[in-house]
Image (cartoon, rainbow, N blue to C red; front, top):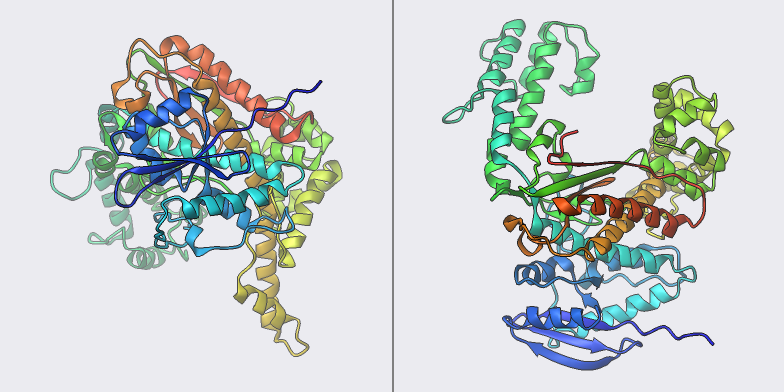
Amino acid sequence: MTSRRTPERRIALERESAGGWTAVELDDATQEQQRHRLAEDAVADWVMEQERDGAPRWIIRSAREVYPSLLAMGARLTRTHDLLLCHAILRDTDRVARPLAPSPDWVRQDPVVDDAPSLFDVLERPSTGDPVGGLLDQYRLQRRVIDSSADGRLALLTSAESAGGLIAEEMRAAGLPWSEEIHHRILVETLGTRPIAGGQPSVMLAEAERVRSILGDPGLNLDSQPKLLRALHRVGVNVESTGRWELARHDHPVIGPLLAYKKLARLLSANGWAWLAEWVHDGRFRPVYIPGGVVTGRWASAGGGALQIPRNLRRAVRADDGWRLVVADVAQLEPRMLAAMAGDRAMARAAQGADLYAGVVATGAVGTREEAKYAVLGAMYGATTGDSGRLVPRLRKVYPRAMALVDEAARVGEDGGVVSTWLGRSSPRPSTEWSRMQARATDADAEPTDVSVARRRARDWGRFTRNFVVQGTAAEWSLIWLAEIRHRLQQFPEAERPAPASGVFRTRAHLAFFLHDEVILHVPMEQADAAADAVREAAAVATRRLFGDFPIDVPLDLRIAESAEK
């Protein structure tokens, strides 16, 4: 006799425009069962009561809209279905016959991101007479698409994406432990004495004077690219830009101090004293994360530059007294995902252990680890020139299945088609202008220059789709990893020694930071070993959830420390 699965509890939760909240309990067929009107000062207790009674899946418009206020009141949600995050996936996926119909009412309202281009239009939220009516209608439509996916991958993807929405808000609420004193000390050590009113720090000013002296221009504004380019040209440094890589190709006495100055200027601008004053308060850095802010599903940031923290500032990331950081990152995540997606056992063998590139060298395809890195990255990003372009063909002989997967993704892109990640997030179609350009290039009387430009644009789009399937699948692995870590930490007992600045997580081990393939946990000292085990277990589960028993290693570089400095 087989046991019947207990139906999942579902509760739609929406904040009313006039104040208060509306909650609607649903039956298993997504039909309304019971409706509750909740005052602002009562919603947190009611939500926590529902969580204790058997955590439901909360149907919400967006974690960003409803979750910060709940967290501030001490209420945490275990699992949700985030309609705005899921709409983008289900609208564009090519994994079902009838994807979700586009709707301007369900386009996500993201702030301008500072780590990736904004991918969603900013639209006003529609108003309806029923606070949850439109929400329930959209949920039913989304369930129709998810249920039509025979292999269950869209269900896993939307669940992981929704969990990511919760985690982003929880990490912002908890914050990343950050020592303002150490940060200030690093700035002084690196940049020099802080200027009292404007101007430049002393070390940076000294480097600037060296550059001006070599260029023979005492009044030169180094932050003006046109003026700097003219000064460089006058001394024979004929560059088209002042980018670091282009400057480094030239041998001239000015290059060293100029690169040093530009590095200091970046630190001052991106993470200097002004950044410290704006983004770090009460010992916490609280950036604004945007789950799915990049078209491949990677996260972006819309404040604080969370995805660009320099390594030399990582020692400012310090656990509270009596707490520890668990820092873990994955070595070469994307090529490992490629090997598993393609079912390429030869590449999977190279991925056994911590260094996939060393495994590539062992095959004899390339001679050095550096060449292996160039070749693998070139394969995923479509390199055709330089060392990568020279080495990529060698991989086709030893890893034919992996290379066939990305080559086919590139071919589909060049033809204007759509490719998808392992779980079903699909790439956007090329623009109308791109399609028109390709069409014009096929005309019998097309100009040679038009044909050349169209071919170049087609190859560019093919390189995008080639990488999309790999980067997007790596983002899916990371989402599941995050969700599994969070699930395990929720089982940990409360700590005796609190971390007061972490808000609702002041007595709970919690995720504090995420960057593509790295996580930082902030945990009570006595729970550090158990938390490290949870991170390892979560990685193993994420790999198994995606690829079953395919033998692919996804090793972690994991450490328990008081500081995030490597």
